[in-house]
Length: 201
Length: 201
DNA sequence: ATTAAAACTGAACAAACTGTCCATTATCAA
DNA sequence: TTGATAATGGACAGTTTGTTCAGTTTTAAT
Image 1 (cartoon, helix red, strand yellow):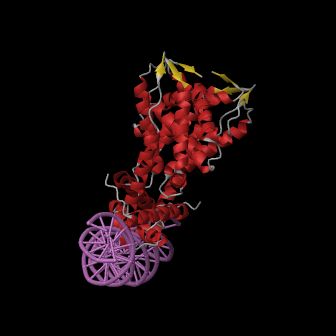
Image 2: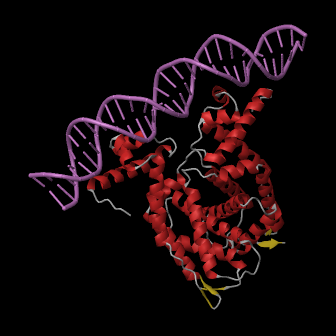
């Protein structure tokens, strides 16, 4: 990994990155032009091409950096001892994930919630989220434990959509009824229930 | 809703839609040009603009159609009787979802698994999917019930990512530890455990 | 402090695609 | 059959693109 330590390069790249993220949250990745980036970064347009092939290359490099950093911070963490799964290990792993994302919050928030045009996944997520919110409020349930509504519904809707996408990408190899059974099972008992293990506090 | 029933319009729109979906799966939405669409649809480029403002407008219209159709097929379905949640109702609702998506499989599969450049959500989903697959295989668990590995892992990773995105979009209002606790709880006991209800078979 | 390397600038260039317009032709519904 | 309208194909100017190049600044290293 050839690291450049020329001050000019560092400065320019930072200017480009900042301008890029700002522009994405303003108008979305799609409608950004290299002219825009150079303009708000206050650099010459030609300078941009000294560092990146085009705006897609820029996006790729930023993405790779973020994922590499995330990957470092999230190490394999689960272990079995006497056929027992340590809950504390699971929790620690999740804490690392949330911390890692918080440490790059500008990038992640911008990339994960920018309203770009070709983003059908996001639209479907919103669709399911709304559907389940309606169901939830229609039921008028009393909650035993205090889990915020948003967490519960984003968990539910994303899980189901995730399985749907997996199913599509694997050529819909299972019948609708079979899929519905699997999901129902996971929803009621929790994914951990599948395994023949016990839990330590 | 002014419905056109001119044969020429119907024919042209179908040609455009088919060409569009084919091109998306070939090279992704981003790099498609109106020239491409007109070319593979074997229509004049000007004709495209007779029906759509640009390729984004085309995408929007197709998306709206698909979501409207999905919305029709998925009706609110959960009811409580004597504080009991009918599992069969939940299952039926999910079956409807899977059936509805299967009935528009070309559109949904193309839109949900096309490799377009600005698609960080998809990349993160893949990232988590891989991470959890590694954990899974590392653990070498014995499964009680036969839930396909892909379903389990896509459920897990999508659920967690969904909560993360919700958390980001709500300004990270909870601490990492709190989030980890909520998710752990949902994973172990299932989202349904939160409610003070019982289930009917 | 000097210097050689390099990064940056700004302007110019052809190429690709865009969205619009027009006159002409082909196809449709009635 | 006919009047309406959809489709064609070509032309148009306007953007953005990616590249090049000569001239200038800035940097790292001596």
